[in-house]
Length: 151
Ligand code: HEM
Image 1 (tube, rainbow, N blue to C red):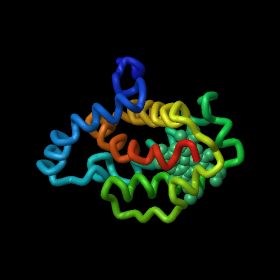
Image 2 (image 1 turned 90 degrees about the vertical axis):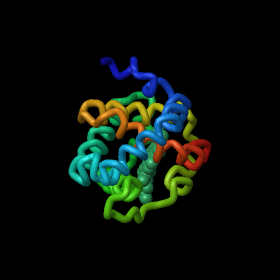
Image 3 (image 1 turned 180 degrees about the vertical axis):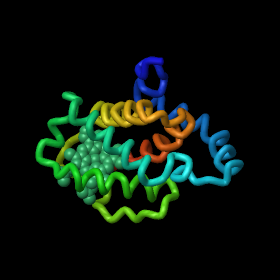
Image 4 (image 1 turned 60 degrees about the horizontal axis):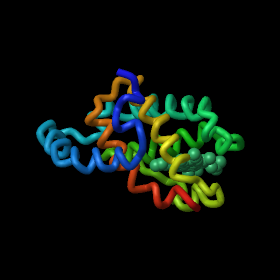
């Protein structure tokens, strides 16, 4: 299936809506398996691979790669991995900037935000992350949008 054909890949509004509807079932699935999302994703190695591939996708994405021209990419990857690890119930601690501080002065738009989400979805897709787990991770990231855009 082409990624673009997934309703989730179209825009974040769709992501939020789909996630909101899907969450009770997914939360139930998580309880049933007794595993955190972190564990279901495959722990830190799998999260590191997904984040790494997302950054590779961002680097090739002419819609948003200019924002990262002066960024220390290994540092960004480390911060993102810790953030996702902690946010999904893993043993890591995110010690980076707040989302408002990290994106201050960038004047990011919702379109920029959605482009990065697409690059993440592309990475999760190529790393064979099941759609239910993709939705759970996106549901954790989506509420950060107001702190990321228009700063
Ligand atoms: C949910 C969405 C996002 C999350 C979770 C996120 C997370 C982060 C984190 C953890 C950092 C590192 C903070 C630190 O160094 O302490 C960061 C930095 C950065 N983010 Fe985001 N980000 C998001 C969206 C975006 C978007 C949409 C863009 C641009 C299209 C973007 C561009 C950047 C850039 C350029 C930096 C590095 C700034 C620097 O060079 O110091 N981010 N982000």
